[in-house]
Length: 274
Ligand SMILES: [Zn+2]
Image (cartoon, rainbow, N blue to C red; front, side, top):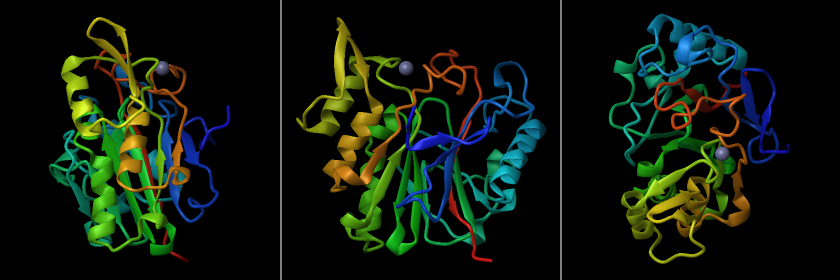
């Protein structure tokens, strides 16, 4: 299967190293190659899910070694299904890397224009959104479950880069990573009412009714629509076809595993020149 995310190791998928992703270390982990056991077997990278912290840190260390990006240079955020985004600097390196309590609080998206920072967020069905503006050395990552998606965290990153960083919309590229697909994600009216609100009549609808009051929702397509609504060119948006629930052999899935499961890590960073 050809995908913008390519499996390079049992532990790892990397974003294809072609433009605009040539200069970055960016990708998504699998559930294999770690030391966790039980529901977290084996490569759980989430510190907040009830797994043994020491084991999770060893798993994270394993990923740091694979990427050759030291754990001391990772920055993680709390991830509360909101739409708050923070700009980070290398001086904050290590926040949330080895303990959840030091993660950037109340935040679901991070971005930076500094090299030597690995932005690392945890996922198990939610949509990872990778942002890059190569001409401006800007990179970012956002966590968009259904709540973050309908709060339009995708559009919020675009707004910040445009308004605060003065980056032209035409210079921004986005990759939408492995996440639960419409094939496996049925929601009810309580979710759809928010989807309709954020879409403001935009077509085509990213969901279809499968039974009365039940809808198969395509969160990747919805994020793509919101990115285009924010002004990102369609040909600057890359969408992974991986479904975290279908690909049982590769990924943890919060929904498929009924809540008790591990977390994959999405990451993006630019290494310092040697
Ligand atoms: Zn699926």
